[in-house]
Structures are given as C-alpha cells and as structure tokens.
Length: 306
Image 1 (cartoon, rainbow, N blue to C red):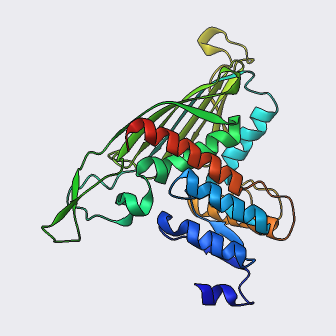
Image 2: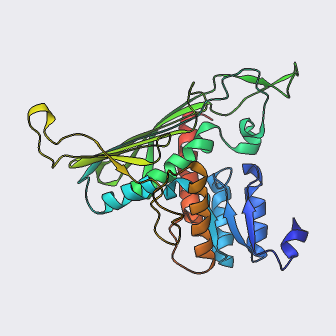
Image 3: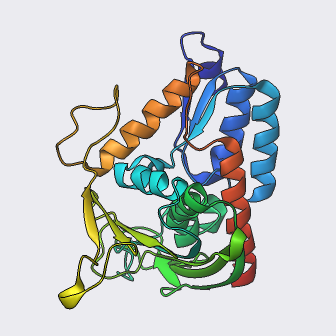
C-alpha cells in the first residue's frame, strides 16, 4: 500500500476494505496527499473515526463517503420539500433497512459477521445508511433506546465445514431516537427480513404533510398534502406519487425520463465526490458526517450490549 501511495500517477484512493482496515488506509492516504472516497461505516468505532477526522482535516485532502442514498432523486425531492416547509412541523420519522440472506444457519462466517473485522452487524452495515439519511433530511439525531438480536449464534468456518465459530454481531437491531424540535423516530436494520431484497423504507410525517420512500419502488416519492380539501369519497386527499425517476439536473442527466436504478445512485455519489475533488460545490457526506454516524452507532451498540 505504501508503494502505491508513493506513485504520483495515483490521485484518489477508494477505501472498500473490511471496516477494520479503514483507519489505516485513510490515514496513510491522507498523509500521502491523496483524495479519499471511503465506504461506510467510516470506522470500527467513534474513537477511530475521530482520529481519522483529525488526520483528514490536518492534511486538507478531499474526502467523501459512499452514502449513496443521498443521491436518490426521490430523496433529493423529499429534502427539497422539507426545506420548503411542505411538511410543516416534522414530528415523526420511521426508517427501516431490510435484507434477507443470512437466514441459512449453514451460511459460513464472513468478515461482515466477525466483530473484529466489521465492528458491528446489521446496524453498522445497513443502519449506517439509514442514520446518514435521517440526518441529511431532518438534522442531528440522538439514541434514546436500542435493542439487538443475534438469531444464529454460530456459523461454519467455511463451506462444508463442521467446525463452527460464534457470531458476535447483531442480525437485527431496533433503535429509538430523537432530534431537535421534538422529532421522534425509530430505525430498524435487519439481515433476517425473510423475502426482502434491498428494502429501505423511509416515512416522515409532519403537521401539514408526509413523504414516503421505498427503495424497491425508487422511481417515485409518495407525498401527502393536508392542505388539499377533504370531501365526499375522499375529496382530493390521498398520497400522490411524484415521478422522480432519473430527474438529475445537468450534467448528471443521462437522460431524465427513464427508470432509475441502484447503481445510478452510486454513480451520482461518486460524481459528487469528483466535484469536491475539483473544488466545486458538493453535497455528499463528509468526514464529519462519518464521525456523527459512528457516534450514533456506538451509542446504540452500548445500549444493546454488543
């Protein structure tokens, strides 16, 4: 790694290793003057995250994170509506990120299931996205209560092996949180949601309206407007689907009217990082955002006993 970082033809380092190695790579890359694009979560814990922030700030290298859900057109539209006051006073946030695939008790252990390599389970892996997304839309959030479960306590060391090792991370977690202005919320993260694919659901409710987003139907943002008149048979009340599709502004538009997909969010997130690299305005997650998410994860895991 040191030899690669010495090369003048390498300008950007993408950190996509298991979480246990993020700190070393980020700090070495920053001291070598390289721009850094880091996967989530930022680190194993907030102590490591703070150390990484100090080095990145000291060296002033461009830094970004792969919190790509900030760049879903429906989420960008939701943020636009919230900032314009469409929801009025926000009082409730409900977010869940659900995967399946770990239900098989004979699925072998992997780095994501080893605490010494991942730092956490479903909450760190999936919930970190949800935490960043809620912060991006409604501001800072604080853990109030947290629960977690490990459903399968041991797993084979490899495929076809009879030797099993303990699993020490959460398969499922549930966190209650609060934000400023009396906002209450809940976050669920699971890798045991039978039948789910990549199922991120977000609901934000306010005095004047609500917004709903579902990652398995990513081309639409559902909005409810209390100001529309009620009446016989419902009047004009009801959730409206806004066709956000691939409606990125230029130069990200390629083109806008076609269905959007999961990979496209990563493209937009990476594009935003490149804007930051070239000194232009960018809205992607910073090292500070990574630290804040890590602090939330630490607080939740402390209450969960993991």
